[in-house]
Image (cartoon, rainbow, N blue to C red; front, side, top):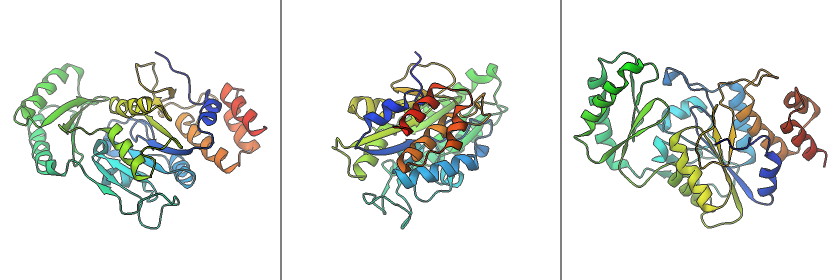
Length: 311
């Protein structure tokens, strides 16, 4: 199913958020950075970093990712953000003195799966040993979960790799196996996911039972569906799926994959452009140069922004 573009429907989104506090939640891989063969090289561009930094000055902003919190922080390098690593099982607030938002709890730290740390570390080591004979596999320790990346594994070896992973997990009934974009995720069997992390962060900001908030969650992976569903069930805000192709999703809108450049401007426009327009509308600083950039060919998105700016 093809959902409408978040850029094409930008005016509708801003109207729905009118008078409410916008809170931004962003996945990392495939959203702020392109999906790459080596997960250790999934760097975000300096342009995207500047955009997210500006975004955090306007709205409370969180990174919600399957990555280890420390690793994603080293990629993003912005102390003013919330970070929810390990699929939301490792949550940390902005560094002291960095938040511009009065509601933020500076000392926030929440780790609902802390009891599983020794088990995850043990499983990680066993997975390294069990899969070492499979060329191209990358096993990653994400602190409260482990990831087995098979993007560079020959497709003929995938079935064998699944058996290897399951042979390790059969000794750990308290862990579960999920699949993402060419990655197997091994996680604690607890009632916690990105949707729960989103709820926790909204509660921490003082918006737990508030109708005066408009959460926007942008992500590309199956694990982001928990957050999309939470927003849909809550009846507030919107989920935005980042994808090249139509998919079944609980998100309301979509944006292009960040690995695809805009054919008119030759820049990674979709996610960066959407976030950038949000900040410019917040600060009332949309100018002719930016409008020309998003115009290229007179797209509906450009017309929408121009119409809103000229009101």
